[in-house]
Image (tube, rainbow, N blue to C red; front, side):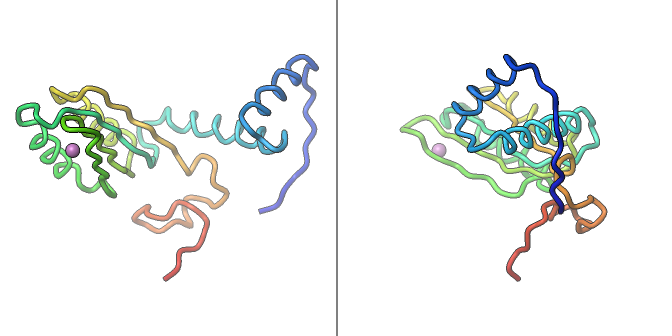
Length: 158
Ligand code: NI
């Protein structure tokens, strides 16, 4: 991966506001902030496609006393097991639970699963967060393993 220096003409007021914004966000320099913007834009563009490969989480907050809710959650997750890498469950207090379902797969199916989980009666709050690594990683998708498990470019210990 090579770095290429590029120049961009920007309105001075706009740049001033951008610099203030990235300082508040804790960026050490403007270049990294620009790179993040570009990656975010490419990511957003990719997420427009129903066939995009995505990774992410579905976060659910619910009261585990709700009738049949834990059973329904379990059943649905088994129905879509091929999308689910793992599930983290935290008991927030006596009643409330937080469940984070880590997913990877085709956007259309992931959205379907998220909608069904979030739609279960008794789920108080739910949110799907997705990222499409193919949009911004430097390694082309075709170099990836067939099962789509390694869409990133670092090495894993064997
Ligand atoms: Ni719990």
